[in-house]
Image 1 (tube, rainbow, N blue to C red):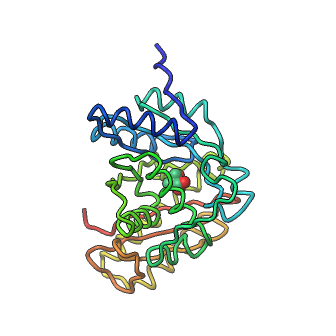
Image 2 (cartoon, rainbow, N blue to C red; image 1 turned 135 degrees about the horizontal axis):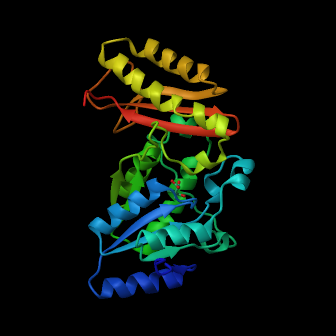
Length: 286
Ligand code: PAF
């Protein structure tokens, strides 16, 4: 039997009314911000929200301010009916799917910009990207008044940016990091994977495999610089045209590291044809 449809609201007014009625009844609310094209990674965030809160609200908004390239925005998958069906199946309570004018009305002029953790990695390669993410997430948090919000560790730099502005601006919301969900061959789930051809898809796991090999080489005591160069080469020789970065960073403040510390994390971004894939892993023995 198909699940009952998920309720959809499209305005701040309707979102607040719905969340307000839950809160008035003593219920807590978890938020899952998304840009749609939902996959098992997003649905794991819905499950995590349902485990911790009484109500789970997913958002679907393809945020133009976080795209540095117009072609990327234009080809971003838009699959609202399918997304709503998946959310219903996952037992989310509400989908907030505003249009662009609801989020950025005529005359909109405010930008949230986070320094430090936004520097380098995707912040270096995609100018303005994290300002766009921080701005829209600030709005989604304030519009919904949710108690908690769920973010996948696949977008680890995004997670750190969100944690930073929430602390800096005293926004009363708890940020819950959730582990990356992977395909069997290790490829991190991403809405962008839909843009890979079958041939590219066979090459795509090289990004994760190179990160794992690099973690092992670092734990075996090899020099960071040499291991980063090897990682980059491995991704290129698997058929990726361009490696944007392959780096070791501190997992908390995201500063670059030139030797291995207890809280180190490896980050990579690379292009397979027109598709930019990113991934990251902790460097630990476990
Ligand atoms: O990770 C995403 O899908 C987006 O960056 C987010 C957090 C929904 C903000 O638009």
